[in-house]
Image (tube, rainbow, N blue to C red; front, side, top):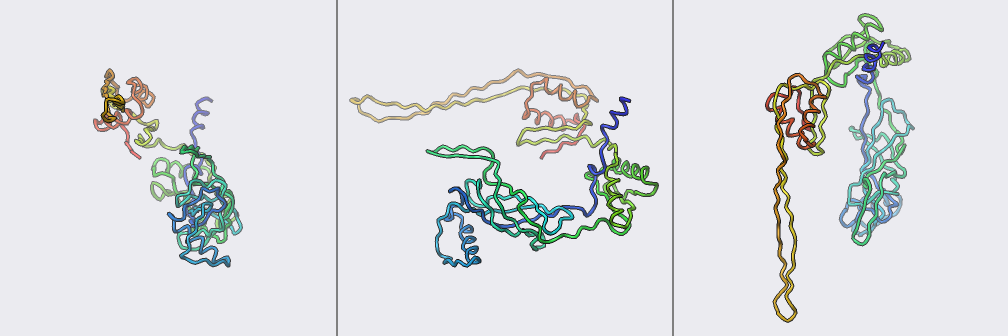
Length: 356
């Protein structure tokens, strides 16, 4: 019973492994203005597009200003508005939008986005956005000091866009639908085919390649939706993925999957640190002695080298043993990057090394 419970815990639903071909989001983008800022908007002398946008908007509302007129406004900011139009979206449906500052606004907190058309890749307007911004941050400044919590130049408008145009979504072609796997894996794709044929009937599913599965589906819309609802909740045991190590040198993060192993090797690690201390000293002569005040710079350089260590790693060990062995060297995240790269170059790391 424990073995069965453990096996079922690793099963994943088809909806988590694949998506129906053609059922996708569509990206929308627009250019707009945010009003009502508390003196934290764009400096219009440095962002001429903000001033031009305000003049154009006022002209559409019946107020004409000279294009050469200089506006000194601090409560307006030019922004880019982005949204994702979900599949099967209908006219009148509300979607969330993200608002990001384009100019030199200090904060969008407390602002209101005015009516902004959102366009798709074809240049057509698919939604109109407007509403009050929700900025998840705070900041204050004064007397040359400044403090900020989180990011203040971007925010969200929950349900801030109304869909004005629908995008037709084809749910399959003829009597077939196609499932697209999230990753190309021949083993997992074949297991999806086997599960569908076992639960629905032989010949229902067929693998087109290592990523696409073709499934025979009812042609009536209501039966097809019910059929897909049944398919996407079938459990599949994915095949073991390719051994891979992901390294992000900017943050020092390293992620390995459970299939990573190593060959026999020896790893040496030692810490070398260089500390430079610079101090400014002022030499002030006596009032009656004459002379000038002289500023001198003194630097102290200290080099410290930690005790190196050598550890042997046996072949065929698993991820937990790899982590324990490297931790035993006292390696930090940045040191771990160098160690893994060296092990890969030496042919001891049995995994794909990907740097992002």
